Length: 178
Image 1 (cartoon, rainbow, N blue to C red):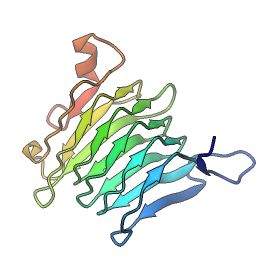
Image 2: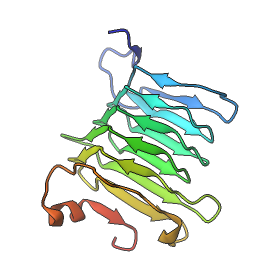
Image 3: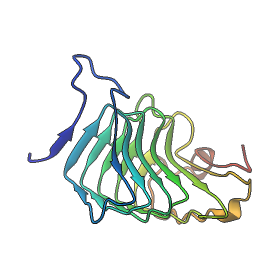
Image 4: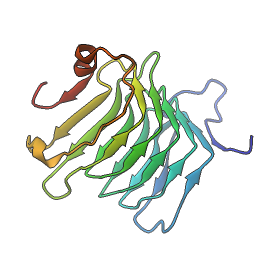
């Protein structure tokens, strides 16, 4: 189609061949739509701003997306998968993540990692996504202070690859359990 492609220029591409697409605090009213991004280190690195990310494929990178500094981006209808460490890292931010596919069939360690602090608590909405198949956890929450009350995750209507609640609970971890 007419998607915009950001990829490696190497003959044999690999994750971390290039750094990221960085949205700095002064990025203004940026929008990411119909984009294919692969083989980077941080994929989309969103710092303080909140560009919407829609209908994109973000794959085969070290991290798919990294949101920090209070970002409230709307992340909708994307395929964010096959990233080596994690598909989405949320650091002191509260994005709305809906109708995405975050599946790992081989090497992806984490689906969604959420970190929060007393300065910027994390309150992401992660609804109606497919999140499964990661080698560690599909969702992982941790506070640098150890206080998980700083993190509030609304994770309703997600497909975890199974209806077995015991299997689902094994793949969702908060720091108090680990």
